[in-house]
Image (cartoon, rainbow, N blue to C red):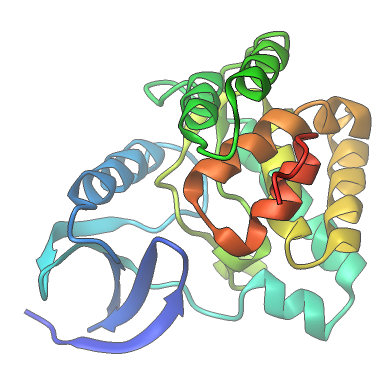
Length: 247
């Protein structure tokens, strides 16, 4: 068994470390056993598709935390590339990669709208009236059966040319691509609102849709993000969801 090496990356839910020639993703909470197996299951499904995803080699408990051993991503993240080069070109490349994901079927994966609905119901910042309004708005939006990443943003995409790898598939689901792009907008918006808007425009242009179709998902997608309990983002998420702040 390999020793856990240096940390390669860190997110809200997990950290990634060197593990011999592979990468070891460890969830922060000891209770995240289900998430480790869910992501491994999702990636095993995706192995059948022509997508640049890591291959899973093991799932288990490492140092008291649950995680999975997978292929290691090489090269800088798209976020780093966007800061150091032609941002517009990198945003367009990111959008093309997202379109490649959405051309695949979402068979055997959870339903995106059901997941958003469950998260809206768990968001403690929303009172009953706000939840009811957002759930009605969500219900009126279109269903879909495309593969959706669920957490597609520049920090989860690494490499360049023929060595690109899309990471973090724990929230993969089946749904409407516009909803998945709107989720990307919300995530990118936290760091760079202008880049978030440029991303929506690039995807709409390349994908033959409209920015309006994508942004129609904004309120329920932002509200669902509240359930992930990131205090520094609460005020912005409430604003994007069209919910008055209690502060």
